[in-house]
Length: 465
Image (tube, rainbow, N blue to C red; front, top):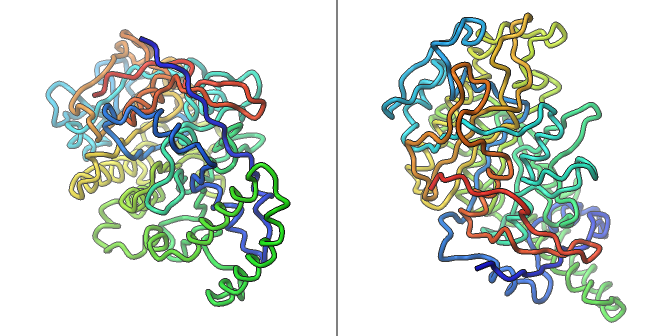
């Protein structure tokens, strides 16, 4: 029996609406991200979640855009010709019959926690299109690459924020593919209050701090309180002039932003420097390692949806995973590239430490961990010693929150070129997340033109549970 359609209306405030008073910019950049709801939205949102079927309450999304090679990671082909397999061998995992590339010895010991999908395919070799598809689960791009909300925004919209933190946090949220450099972390027609809080900065650095999570220069807590009192007096006279409940929505947003500015709990969650040195070293003092550690802290603090963003670093490694080895990239042969400590070894160390640490802390029981990259790499190594874009096959995984670990879903052929079993798309990958959270993908949301749009118009959950 089909589920009756339900309707929600997204928030309509932009960031500019909230930049109102005394330079406290957080009211515009964070308050709207906290999932503040208008009157009547909460019952509808609760009704849209099949709570009895949900196996997860939170999501930790490991996003490595750029196209991570599947040959030198989760789907090695040691018996293939040399121009396919390269110089990297394969090693056994702790699940009989499953092998990883030799540069992933730590993750090989975590295979019992993984539902590894080797037949993931975006169906396109274009970075922009494949990344937008993976981030939204919606392959509806003719109207523009930024037209569809991230699936983290839908999660935040449907389930709300928890733990006194924004519902969707991106660590650091700085990937800008291009040219032209483009921010793909968008809430689109859902409205800005469901956009991610992008932390910015670099968690591995001693001076790391979250952008906008600090009082303006010269404003201490007492001065902030005086400004808040003055603001309340001024706006008290405007309350009657506001129409259709807009004042109340804005008042709630500002109030939640103020809570975030002054919350010791929030500040502790972002204080990755307070972690013991041994724990930080376990994750690795790499960019990816410390981003994963901060993500664990945010999950532990109660954040609904956390994305670890590791993609384009224009200042240091360019697009780390886009290993064409073209002369302009100044990269070594792919077989050497994947041995560099900040490449696959960083994935191996940080992902394995994350899964082990979350399990030890009891966080895996209700947190779904998802690893995605937009596509794999070509089966044949190119004349420059690299691998090019390949939208026909790639590897992703799920762990935690009811996932049946130790299984491999799907296969590729003997050279890792094409899927020999059912292909699972980005729409399927995102549908799997909604299924875990008990979100009904048939729920219709009214866009800004009051048109009903389903949360997930296509896609089928991958059988990872």
